Every structure is written in C-alpha cells, then in structure tokens.
Length: 480
Ligand code: ATP
Ligand code: MG
Ligand code: MG
Ligand code: MG
Image (cartoon, rainbow, N blue to C red; front, side, top):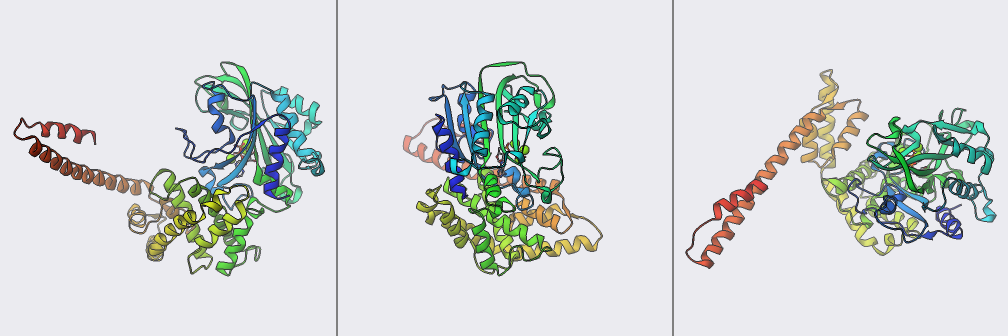
C-alpha cells in the first residue's frame, strides 16, 4: 500500500467516525518551546491547555513533523526520519481510553478490503504505563490481546506531559512484531527493532504538579475533562505494508536513493559490507525530503535556529553525495525527485518548486566552494593529531572549519568521530563566543556612528539648541 493511501485511509477512518479533518499546521507553527512542530497535538495545544474552546469535540489530522533530535539516528536505525508524517486522532473531552483503543485496533486490523491496514492481530504487542491497569484491561477485553503481549513500562517511557505543571497522562504504544529475523524474542521491552513502534496513544487524565510522574512523582489531581491525543507514524506503517527493511526504502523516500545511485555511480545494498555507503544513501534520501519540506514552509539556510538546522541538513547531503562519488551539484535532481514523489500529499512542493530548488542549490553552491579545501584542512589536522598519538581535534581547527570553510560544527563532530577522534568543543565554543562579542562591538560602533550622523542632521535642521545627544546615545549604546 502506497504512503498516500495509508494517510488517506487514516483520515477516512476517523472522519467516518465523526472526527473533523484538520489540515497539517506549518512546520513553523509558533511555539516558544519548539524549533519545529514535532507531533500532531502541537496545533491543538490551546484546547488541551483549556486556553481556547475547541470548535469540534473530535479531530483528525496528518501532521508534518520534524525531529532534529533524531538526526543522528537517521540511516542507522530502521525507523527514524528527520521529517515524517504523524497521523493522529484527538478527543477534547469526548471519548476516552476505550474509544481510542477501539478506533486504533479497528483501523490496524480491519482487512485492506474493508479500508483498514490488515495487520495480523497475533503480531501486535502493546505497552501500557505501570500505573494504568485500566488500559491493559481494555486491550484484553476490546482487542483480545493476551496478557503475554501487554508489557508494562515506567514513567520514563510511558508517561506523557509537557515538561511543566499542567495536563499529563499515561501512554499506550502499539508495536508490530516483524519476526525472528529482525531481533530478539520478548516484546518491545527487549527489542525495539524487531518490535516496531507504530502508534502512541496518550490518555490525558492527570494534573501534573511541579514534579513529573515521568520521574515517579504522583500527579496532583485529575483533569476535569479527559482528552485523547494519538500519533501514528505513517512511514512506519508504510515500511511494514510495503515489506521493506526500513523507512528510507518506502515509496516516498526510496526514489531519492535511486537518483543518488545514478548520480554517484555507486549501488545501494551493493554488498553486505558497504554499510557506510548505505547509511549515506539513506541520509541523503531522508535529508533531501526534510530540506524540501522546510524550505517549502519558509526556512532559509542560516547560522542559527531553524536556518542552521536546514544548513546542516543540506551540507550533510552534499558531503554524503561527494563521499559516494558525485562530482557535480546534486540538489536540482534531488529536489526534483522529492517534489515529484511528495507533491500528491504536499502540492506546495510542486507549485513552489523553482524557489525550493533555488534555495537548496544556492546552499550547495556555497558549500562546494569551500568543501574541498576545508576537507583537506580537516584531513591534515587529523593526521597531525594522530601523529602525536592524540585523540582530540583542536577547537581552533573546528573554528576555522566553521568560520572560513562553512562546516557546521555538527558536521565536524561527525567527521572527527568517523576518523576516531573527538573535538575540543569547549575550545570551539570559546572562540565562537569571542567572535560574537567582536561582531557585537562592531555593530554597536557602526550604530553609534550612524546615530551620531542622524543627531547631527537633526541639529542642523533644528538650529542652535541644547545638545542632549550624548547622554541619549550612551543609554542606547548600553541597551545594544
Ligand atoms: P521511537 O521510540 O521509535 O523513537 P517515539 O516513542 O519517540 O518513537 P512518539 O513520540 O511516540 O515516538 O511519536 C508517535 C509516533 O510517531 C511513533 O509511534 C512513531 O510511529 C512515529 N515516529 C516518531 N518518531 C519518528 C521518526 N523519527 N520517524 C518516523 N516516525 C516516527
Ligand atoms: Mg523517539
Ligand atoms: Mg518510543
Ligand atoms: Mg512513542
């Protein structure tokens, strides 16, 4: 089953059950705690927090998500994308645990002819929170899951809250057993590669106090209205229904790998021992998609915040492609493939294609100007460190790579680790801070010069008068 279809079936299932279909929010939805939207519930937070009255009792969406925290996992695990689609159903004081479990169970186990995903019920495992026997009871009664396939987990894994006093509640996660060839027997608490997490159900029922139940502290009360928040990973369901090994080989991601094979002359899965190459292919495919989605939502490459994440993703692609043997720019082709595969669900990738392609290619061109010389500098620094029997690359080298050659620090860290070295990060940060201070001082003096000129002009306009400019300018200078 194609990813577009998996997404559509999810929405249809919940619309049929009376949910309002709500479009995905932008990845850049304003939230003081988040760089990017990372879950379906983010756009519904004001309802869960009681700040706004929801216009509907139940809703469903497929939310674009970016998790930068998963970037190191990409290509190495079978299941982590930086961009993925989280399908969710939400109840604002309407149905609760039994409703959420029944809905999820029906969708995953109904046959494909009936509009479901057709998973074999005998291969489904679930986890529940240690203090939530009610959820375990419902799973047995409603879904017929035997006690042996229900595992209890502590707050660290199976309790959800927002990190501050407010709503919280136990989670129950749904896993699919991929079989003995994928890992050890014993359920998700033993092996999360064999038992693949596909769906997380959050039962928002508690008022959490200063201390979190995640760390074993009891909640301070019960919520007056109980809510449901769920998230199903569309790419993970696709991996299972398409019978491929990992999320990078699903129908919307794999075409970039194929294009990368074409552009680099290297083969994906060419043999068992070129694991490093395979990781690079997957990184390219994952990051190309994430970059396109970020640019579509308005991010431009830059040196901090969101822009830095995009820069890091794009430069990681360029480096991976070079290491695989690409000799020409790759962005135009990669962006084209992403747009062609993803536009059915995200038409903006097609309507805004020329801008997306321009931004990605511009960043590639900028990095290609310095990549080779920077890489040579890196290699010789590594050789130098090793020849002295040491294991740490200096902060000065990392700073030069960043400042002169445009190597994001994470890239240097990654390259160093590939070479078996660590990096003097503290030294790097000190040099960065010094540079920032210098830049601030420069900006302040420029502003001062500019302000002096403006005051001077005003004086000329006004004619002779008492001069107060210096005191005002000084107080402004302090603020800068
Ligand atoms: P994992 O333990 O595998 O990292 P998670 O517990 O962090 O997943 P949740 O926060 O529960 O994930 O998110 C809900 C669902 O979204 C997960 O059950 C999974 O199907 C999907 N999901 C989460 N992170 C990713 C990711 N990086 N790539 C693809 N799908 C993801
Ligand atoms: Mg995770
Ligand atoms: Mg998990
Ligand atoms: Mg989870």
